[in-house]
Length: 580
Image 1 (spheres, one colour):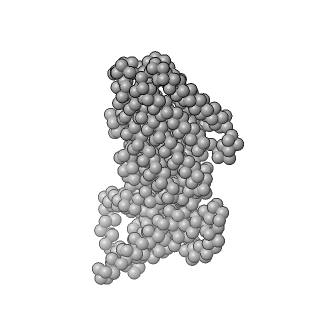
Image 2 (image 1 turned 90 degrees about the vertical axis):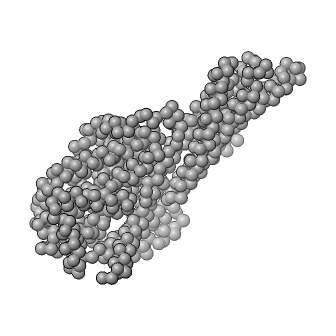
Image 3 (image 1 turned 45 degrees about the vertical axis):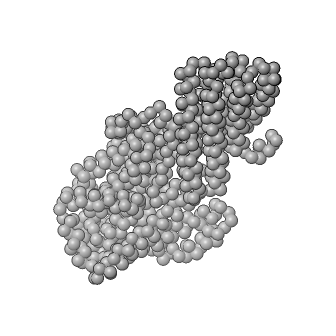
């Protein structure tokens, strides 16, 4: 074969894998879109109960068909404070079991049933759904198209990989590496790891391994070694994502790596006895030995059961590994804390927002949950910023006021960065497959994000104006401070209600209270400015301080407007109109 012929064959193989990956992506995103609300409920219900965590990880990974994406989401959730490290460790264990479902789907349908022949008719049948105006029907149409493309890709992959009959030299070449006992196992564990890191999908690597084994290019024990490598490779994506995360995010990613590494280590020790046990199970059910007949002799008799046997190996290994290590989850957490020290944590660590990409498969629908948590973190940072205002109003000590001004300036820079980061993240989510309900919610998050940043700008303006008069003979007197403090109390109460709404804990009564506070803020603003002008006319207050005082009052009232805008945005628009 010429060098050009080899290049073409390699490109066909890569293209076939890309075809498979695209089908998996479309199918996964469509499932998320259909089950998005339920998926978010499942994720929201995660508790410290490790057994529930395992089932949660299994369900989520079964739906999105990517343990890498699940783990990257977990890193994000731990980073956002949605999950503890211990909770995340249980979910990671379940994700490893969930990723075995892909192998079963491919083994049972991709090799035993010729679904590729039905793929084009399936796409034809799904077209009316695909172009339906009903969003749910359209999403199911996209799922069917994705399902069909996935199996077309698998068929192309099977045809792109040469078989041993027409290419006996390939088997001769591979035999140089597959007959070294444990050394061969180590070599192909590394191969499986590298392939998974490059492809960014353990499911796609698993499909390639199944095809190689089915076509006789690698024997069963080498395919099993590659599967172990895939278990390590799938942890790399999350660890790369965690590089920009906080300490807890790094620890969550490390816990996945530790769990999978421990599993691979004990499996290497018992590798060949374990394979003989799998072989006994398969032989008992089918009458054929996958170890004795998986090479050239008797290969045609066993090739149909090899993919299923590999799925059995993958599933039993992950179930046993989870069963053995679930009780040691606290120990794994301790190991991650030892590996990643807490010295990187700062007092403002929770003020930095972190968002992650989950690789090839988009998780936009589920990422809506993370978006809400990140928005909550931003609100928490703004709340902290607001609480420096009383230090400016009430305190006369120069050091305290200077410290408060410095803190507000620091948080203003953080707020600008966080607003921009969230806007980019929301835009990223909106590009994926999300339902109309999630799309509307995301639009609300965009507006709330801008309103929060505007509140931060108002805090910064107040600090700047007070800094101008502090320390001079014209600084605020006790009477002015008391009135400003009264206005601040109303604003603080209003923001507490808005914070509840951002965290999804508000109701109609919350909105009524918010509306009442908005009226009270406006009335107090009017009274304060009226009183202010009278005092300036009577020469009881200098014009310079009076103007600063007026600017501070106006900025605080504007904060009230921004806070009320958040309530209106998050409250049902139809219900808002009832109050107007």
